[in-house]
Image 1 (cartoon, helix red, strand yellow):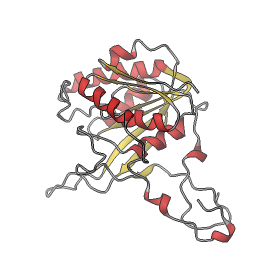
Image 2: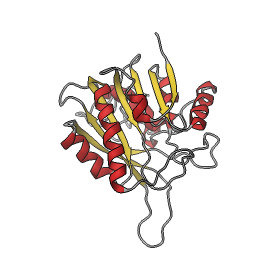
Image 3: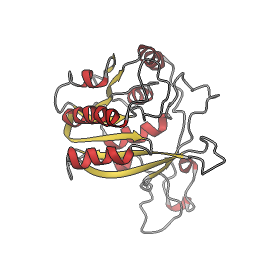
Length: 263
């Protein structure tokens, strides 16, 4: 299998424009949330209209690059997610599939108001009915045995429980918004096949590309910060010892082992 993992240092929109039409099965994007994070060589404090203009540009390119049965996943903070939704559905005429909530165990602590404990992910497809979705690749164990249930496992649903990558973890990289590998694993296994090409236009710490490498996908990762490209290349060269997070339900066994396949 000809698997290629490519890293590109440059502006996301400029570099996406160099990629041929309909050549990407999956775009998995974790763009800056415009929350004034320090990403080194790029600004995360654009004015409202500037940020939406930037979003329109890269989302337009993402749609162009997708195969007819391709999918787009966009991580986004609460301040802009509704605007991104409108751009995708109303302006780009993509098809909404799921609004995923990633619930993590720890986050910013607040004493006046409720502390954040989740991020959101929008899942859109280019076609309303022709798109890749490999449910059997991402099933989680059933909580209870019921005759009507598929005991090969359940659909994980749209609330995903993955621990975040703690700042003192040995897997933590020098990046302010590193996502856990198992989070990307579910996206990649669900919406692409082995040998497909996955695009991450904001590669950051390299999580998406690392998962593509270990799940036999080709991938293109773009970032404007050369330090993050170097970080990603270093990560790709590291010895693999398993993904750095998981859904807690994977540990749960079924309660009628005599009737079931044990994972």
